[in-house]
Image (cartoon, rainbow, N blue to C red; front, side, top):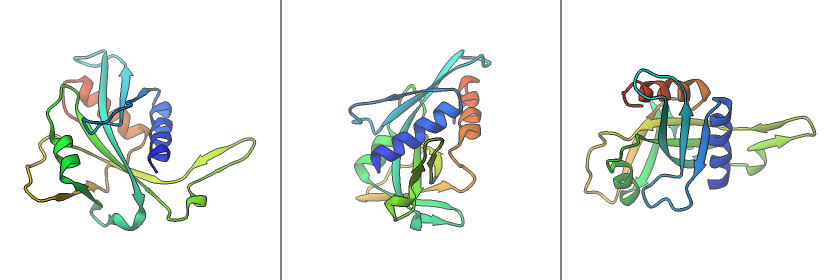
Length: 157
């Protein structure tokens, strides 16, 4: 699941004409950084740190993806950083063989991913915290570009 979520995110970043860096150690709850070089109001280069999760579709509800995080991961996502952080959760079929198909001409990655900004998450004292990634926040090339434009203009994801 970890490798598939990285491949999926990399395909989205590539489609958006961005660069993606894999981090070898995610002690800051960051798996990858997505970078963009473009002219924005404030920055000509911007980036977002991404924590990737992959799970089965049973966490999708009408209002979004309900994803339970252990407290240490939740607290890591809340940690202040000069780069904005987002959580991306990729939903896949329970049957591994349905995740992708390939032929001599095509490679098809299946799944749907959702994102949420982790800025301003409230503190918790419980051992875990369920976050809701809004159903409107599909992680795709268009939303990634919109997010990076907001960041490049001095805003938040």
